[in-house]
Length: 398
Image (cartoon, rainbow, N blue to C red; front, side):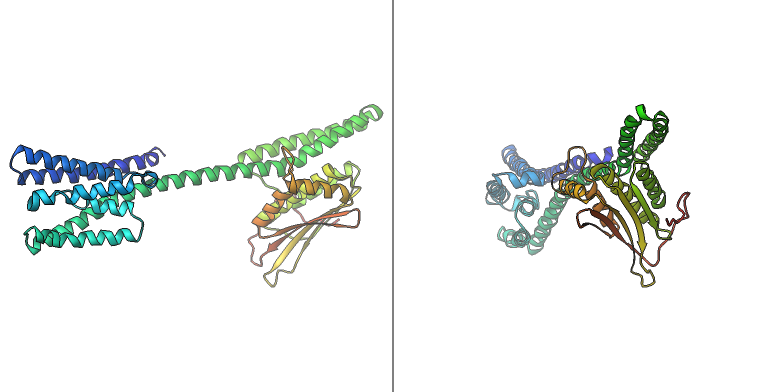
């Protein structure tokens, strides 16, 4: 991780070293053609100025785009690149390709490449006008093109390194946010059911503690078991390991409903579901029953699983949870969809997301004044790898 974080910095160091290397080579070549300290000092000063302008134009792409001085600095770069030909004539070397690279780095595409090619081609008549041979003119054109591509390439690679680092950091942050949302959703969907059951059980114990001590003791034992289950589920969520069974959750939900005075009818088709579908439907049962207990005054609840014919390859399974507390449930659904409550209220959204992840659909509907039906339909492919049965997953029909 540390090496990845240092990559953009290393890339920028390489950009500077390459440019400085070109400048040193130009100073050495110039010193071989200069006689006298004055002309050599003047030529070296021009080359250092050219180097400074090149480094400015090779800065990070975000810096280049927001600098107001770009057009004028590019003009100055061109002047210090071609102006010395008027004074030093055929003995001037310069930094080959520096100005061409600056044009590529600062000029919008595709005009940048047109300008780059034009500068390389113009090097031929320029050198010929200074009295050099055709071979020397062609050599100068190739040197400027290759030098420009080299200087442009290292600067652009440094830009790409920084962009890659920024993209990696963004993807990492997105992964963290996604995992945080997943954890929050799992915590809500898996633990909300048990905590709601514990709350309702405690309310029942308060009623029995004076009138029926024995019943209160029995309910207290049940509450303790629910608390242990909630603790186990909390650990499963935090460790990322959980195994839910639709049959087991449906049976547990039916028992809880009956213990709280709600008539529960359970009917599950005799099918063995793939692991992901089984877990998704188990979570739907938990959330749906939690909503029945928390947001309605239902007296009856039905949990039903049906399965379509898979021989065509377009099979499906549908889970329905119905109750007769439609009036209260509708008000809860509106709050959940329009104005989520602080600390919760995301149940239906979570279920819709889970169904969508499996390619399915969640619907909510009411019939008359009382009936409230939540149904989830998931595709059930013809060729499905079915996991080995887990304890408590035997098909049930009641």
